[in-house]
Length: 107
Image (cartoon, rainbow, N blue to C red; front, top):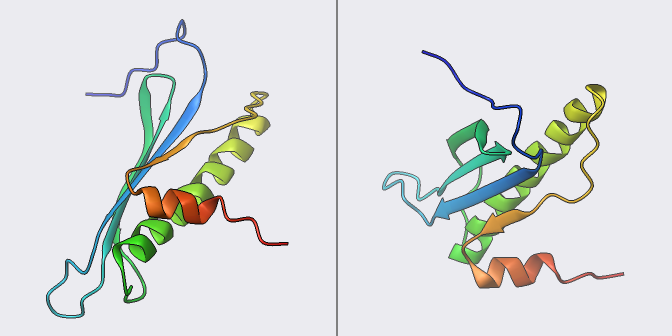
């Protein structure tokens, strides 16, 4: 058993995030899941109950995307330590309202 990381694929990092709204029947907390692909290989993933109760699916998805973004920043720094600089990293989310919320740049 092992993970295979082929050397002939281009190096690009992609993050995916998703959440389910109030899935826990006891405390009504949502669960978020994230994963990261480097080229064609999975390098990071987790599924975790969110630390707070969210009031909407948008809020649950936004928190999941934030968690995914934090992990992307950490992975980018690790890759830079190995001499690989990645400029743009797409973070894919399936909720349009959460995506639009991330684009709201308040100055």
